[in-house]
Amino acid sequence: MPNRMDMFNNLGGTIAAGGSLSQTFDLEGYQYLGLMLFPPSSTLVPGTVQFRVSVDNVTFVPLMDSTNTRVGIPFSTTALAYSAAALAFGAPYRYVKLETSNAQGNGVNARIPVKLI
Image (cartoon, rainbow, N blue to C red; front, side, top):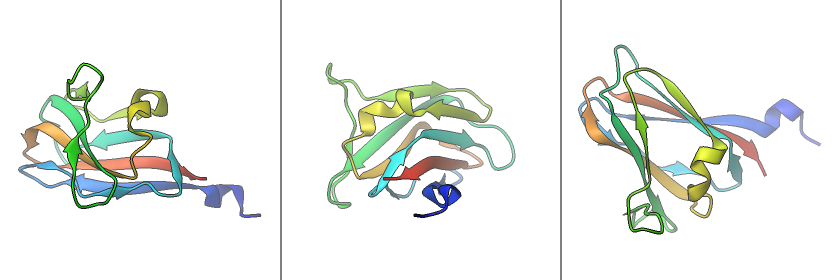
């Protein structure tokens, strides 16, 4: 049996300076526990973090809710963290990209705390 600490990890990524889209997070074999966003040096440009999802890591589409509205979570200028409950809508998708509604001048660091399943 693995050490309990080996069961937890953080998947890290970034949204580049001047950009609005992260690289792909591959969630296969993980249960995600939350999401953290934080600026590398200054502050975030306020907006909404939204999600692009894929089943094949080739075609990414915006994640929509049952009213055909993009799923998103507003954020302000400071670091923030979301619980897994706030992200439950993404559970069926293996591949996820984070997208901000506004370009981020200084970039954004992202961490997805996960647990092996």
